[in-house]
Image (tube, rainbow, N blue to C red; front, side):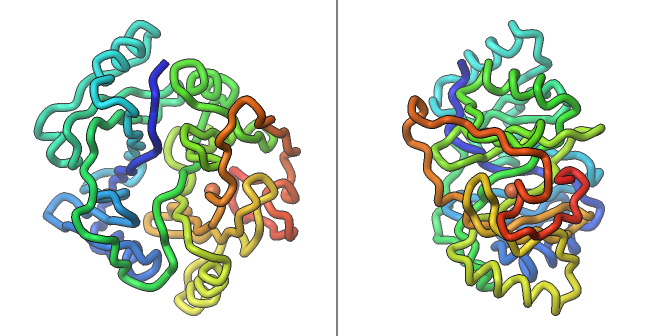
Length: 285
Ligand SMILES: [Fe+2]
C-alpha cells in the first residue's frame, strides 16, 4: 500500500505561456512565483507552487501527489513495478525543475501521468494573490478515465485512496481527510478534466461570478452547491479551454473512515447541483 499525503501540484503544457500567466493571475488570482523561458510557476497556498505551465502540448498533463513518508519512494516504485505498472524515477535535473527533493512517476491505467513527490518545497513567503479572489489553496482535480471502475480499483488497491461518493460511474476519491482530491470522470481520453481551487467563502464565489462575466469569461456551471461535498461552486472556462473551478467544498472533513459510508448519487444534473444549475460540461452530463 502506497501512502499519499495529498494532491500537491499540476504540470500542464501550453504553447502560450503569456496567456497562461495572464489568465491564472488576473482571472483566477494565483501568484506568479517564477517565469522563465520554458515554464511558469504559480502559487495558491503555503506550497512553493501548485501549478506549473511549461512549454509543451496543451494535452500534456501531469498530476503530482506527495508521498506520506519521505523514504517510501523506492518501495512505492517497487510495488507499482511488481503490479506491472509502467513507472520510473525522475532525474536530479527534473527534481530541481519541480522544486522537490526527488520523485518517481507512473502511468495510471487510463494513461494519466502521475508523479510521486518526496519532500516538495514549502513556500518561504506567504501566498499573496494577484487579485482578491478569496483563493485559499489548490483543492482537487477531475481526471479523465477510460474505465472508471478499473481506475477506482487501481487507486484503492495500490494507494490509501478511499471513495467518498459516486455520481453515476464517477468516483470522488480522497487520500486526505477532505471530501475528495481526485474525481474520475468517464472519458475517451486521458488528461485533467477540471482544476479546483478552494475559496474562503460563498461571497468569493458570487463576486467572481459577476466579475468573470464582466471579463467575458465563459461560465460553464453554477453558481451552485454540490450535493456530495456540500460546497458552493463556480466552474469557468480557462486557458487552453481547461475548466477551472472555485469552491469551498473542503468544509466536509472525513476523519473516521470506519464510520463514513460512501454514497451513490444518480448521474443527473440534480446530483451535481442542489440548486438546479445545469452544467455545460460534457463529463457532467
Ligand atoms: Fe470539482
